[in-house]
Length: 341
Image (cartoon, rainbow, N blue to C red; front, side, top):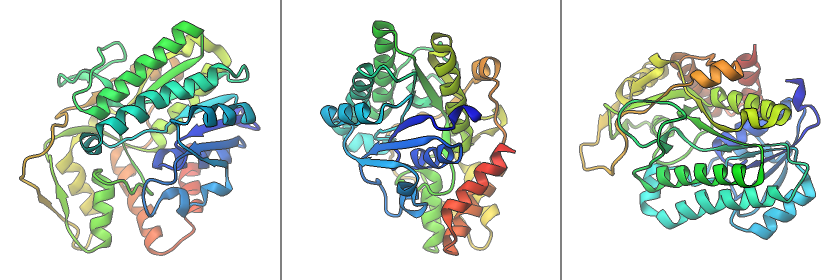
């Protein structure tokens, strides 16, 4: 990945889980990384634990502050932008729909508007989600209709349309990246399965499982990030050919029910790890999600490297390092190096 050496890269949402991992990886590749985001959304956070602020010029600001964002883009003059700033939690979106739509839709508008006035920007990757599709219980391809039942999913589908509009109206090199349910060390979000498991383990409790039969395309966080990096490079070099939507999902066999993932987590951790079912009424969430990544495999040469068992083992490895107060930036770097081999 020699392309990234000395490239000026802006990562919005760099204080979040995926953004922190991406910032660490870009730093390892020799990029000049700038981050723009609110303060870390959780305590603890991977951003703080891995000292990401030491690896990137960090602007703590709101994606909804268009003038501040414009000023940052003019100052940094990024060649590549990864847009990850978002309200990313489905259940949270039911509680704060206005915040979710504002951040996920107008945040995308603001980012693209700021980038539109900067001739140095060669590629923009707008990170959305597998949940942008109109859910009908099938394997989704990039050409399938957009939809979104809940405010989070709908707002991300809107973000896709915003990106499409700017791409068509202004000739910008914009791609959208749709990934599955990512897992990895350092995720502390509320109402996500693996962080809920980690918190329960560290407190000596059993994890509470809401939808044990729901099927999700589980993958380690480094899988889609490797796709984003490859996509951005192709987009910067060859432009419109690589614009548009791209799926980055795991192998078919790694789309598994929630219960199977939790059982494997408990087995990998050992000891008294276990789970109980929450049989109360839950907000609507899609029952079945799976992505067809044939386009990414064929045109980008991207394919998953770590299966779900490996991904779970890496989560356990990272969490045990956290328990032992290890150098977590080095743990992340080692896992990235091992992934790249």
